[in-house]
Length: 234
Image (cartoon, rainbow, N blue to C red):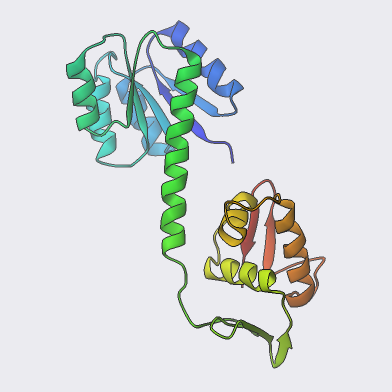
């Protein structure tokens, strides 16, 4: 899914420059020119990140940031034409995540945007990983996993899984309903230092489907999310 960046900037030339470069980098960019429009847009369709100019007509960026931070946790990078330490401190104190002083290079801005979005992704991943379904046995209809004995059953029939197939099925089952990317699965099941690529995930998913799906060609338990990865439905 394309990540959405809300640009709050009243200077037309910079608006166009930011939108062009962010769109080119693969983001969906929405541009508004006032604080009021920023609040309205962010509330109606929360973005993944906000670039917030401080000097705005009417309600300034600091006030908009203060309000938004009380309502949502969207990362906010503040932009200002003044190299003013007070502005920077106030912006960070009210909840801005980063700060750039104009003029800035597009390379630096894009690097800051990428870093903030990655930080959010990692935090969300950690929360998801820390709160799996914890149980010694997991049951999904006729599919049963005995975690301690590392055994899997379909009804009364034992399913013979290789060690990595079991590890993969367990990980998917403990995160039932979550959209899991191939890279995340690879890191969590195989380990960050695994030399193979994400193709290993696809191969093991295919093997699992052949063993636990009624129709492996039309899987119901492990579904493919095009462009993302997989989701375990149970």
